[in-house]
Length: 215
Ligand code: DX5
Ligand code: ZN
Image (cartoon, protein in one colour):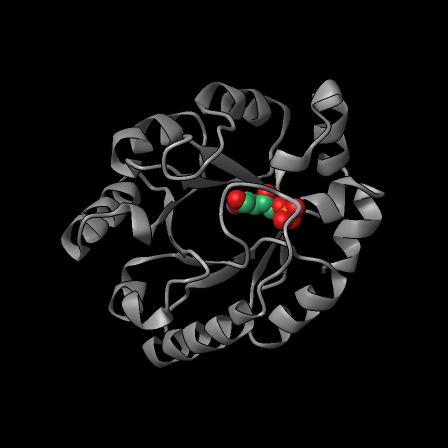
């Protein structure tokens, strides 16, 4: 699949309405919503009220990526606020049992569930968990801030995850997030990435053109 998910973290917050309208009129099918709690990452972004607001102004798929210390605690709130995908971090969880429990909890609400790994986490750590998820998110920057440089190690990870998904013969999407532009986006697509998240690349230029360049 070829999906572009603009990250609203880089949106112009002085004119939110206009930015959302531009996304609605673009070829982006998803909106990527980065939640940061100032504990799991060194930054605070936004929570459920903002998600509810965006949801009211858009029919696009809400792709919620929580960079928070306790993803179980807030899952229900984000799902009720309109998350279509709820993606949490492997590194935030105590053990595999808890990861599977949360994955099953989210799926039981008819919401898609994703697992994310930071740049220093190897694929072999999550290999046995992939089958419990609808989406695997490979971080290509350290989570916390937009505008960082793409970490090339993500390309190999996508390749490894793709191989595992093919062996499983399951319908699981691969997403990459951080520092995405035309060049590295193309490389990620070539090795099997389905969803490209992009923030600064899209919002610093013409939204329509930038989205199209990643499709
Ligand atoms: C980083 C976020 C990313 C980020 C992407 O913690 O998860 O979604 O906003 O922004 P760019 O494309 O600017 O790296
Ligand atoms: Zn993200």
